[in-house]
Length: 381
Image 1: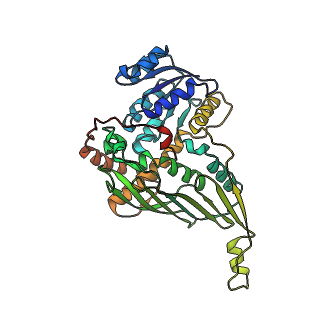
Image 2: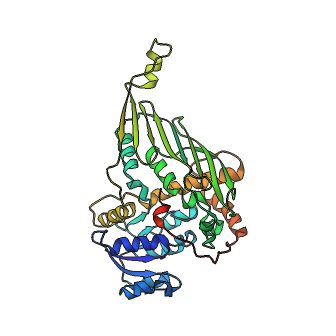
Image 3: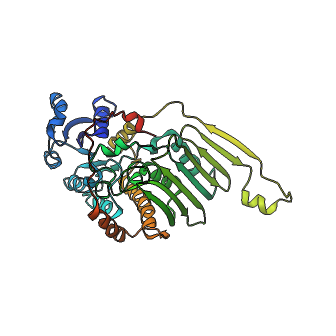
């Protein structure tokens, strides 16, 4: 598969290196696009075709697939053009700035065998893969409660001040819910499904000089009566990562490094009704899963895309699922704006109208002239 990459910022270069290092079986990097074009002279020296405009790459006929790693506000126009040109599309997260925009991207798909994937790479994290396996096998029984405290997304001020579009309504459609937490939100709904109601309190610019959210506390209700909490922040350090999923047959707990499954010997609800012990509890047993090795998650997603395009695998992260994370993020932000519960599915048109009002008042950030030190490995959680 001949790949083109549109956007050679931090993550775009990570994808380029993975392909060039031969980590994606059956893939070749043939073209890149970035502005200004002079910024990718190193690719020109490697005999890779370089473009200064995304449209030129898409229309060149050189590529079978494109990876779009541009600022979020450019995802929709570029993604739509790529799909209308018949190319396979791999979009960096998030899919778009909001649900309605994401729906317009998906509507541009031209044929059934056209791949539209999203870089929701944490679906390949061994801990979350194991949790998914346990849940699908019925280890927890019916969901009772889920709670995720994800506050180790700390970002210093220079992170935001390095780009004019970052942490603005116009550039990203939000803050940490749109930039860092799409991974967590995606994994959450992938594991336990979508809630039916959301009540949230987002704090905008609480820890940073930004116009969007950098702290979130949300409450969820699910169709079966289960409840959930989600807390996230880019202003805490060291922060924590703790996911708990509680069911009628047990509990799963993970910090992203290992997973513990605590099983009950029988249904908790059934035991509660049948026991004559005033302080009795079912017997429990524990199972601990520790990954033996790390997984290059970006490589895993791209390898899966190539396999899916040749009919050898199902997509791990189809872009259609990206609408769910957009919907949850939007519901949390919208709940804060209206100071009320938001019922899902989110009204995409109503939310688009509300966010367009924010975009109309949005201002580009002043970019610091100080060069930021970048180590992408420190950005992963």
